[in-house]
Length: 214
Image (cartoon, rainbow, N blue to C red; front, side, top):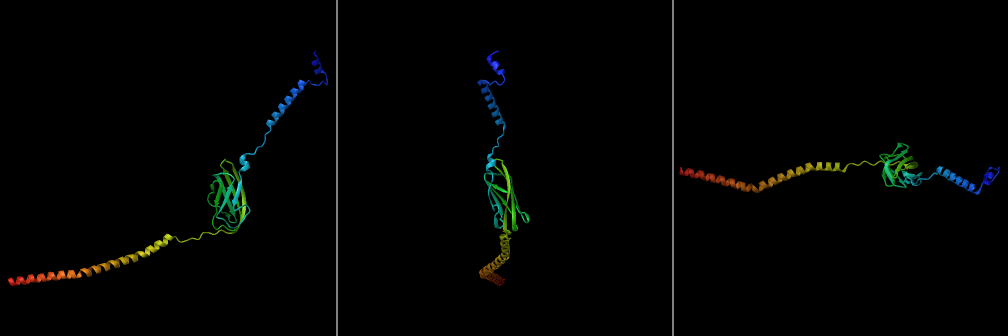
């Protein structure tokens, strides 16, 4: 039995230096493996930056009248797919048509004659990277929006005026034609009468000569 073997078997014997080094290496490797197994939460760029930048009307704003449309401005480019904006007020849903997406803006039209009161805007948009976010905000209108005043079509008035002018034009044309005919007859009447008189005189002379010869 060697001296080293005898030391390992003795109770309370201290480990040799090369044994302590091996144990330290094993402990370090086990700790590194355990650290790799623990997931570390990371914030994605989309989650960190995609957001609502501003709106018209603004969140919590009070406006004089209900606007004709609500506009949202986002922090990045949007796609039309999945874009939705619903505006509700005292009379119910007042948004009409589909939300229009242009770049970083979303515009939602509202009905006319919407009443005064508190309104809530619920929205959902999709960014160009596929990230979808949603949210809501409120605003208040102190007066209702006004409905457009109907106006008579200009074409109808023009048609009625043209229709009234046509009989007058026809009458004027008829009067002009009659006047022209009268003027023409007055110009040629002496010539025609002279020709008839000459024809009659010639006929009378021929008859007189025949009687004399007979």
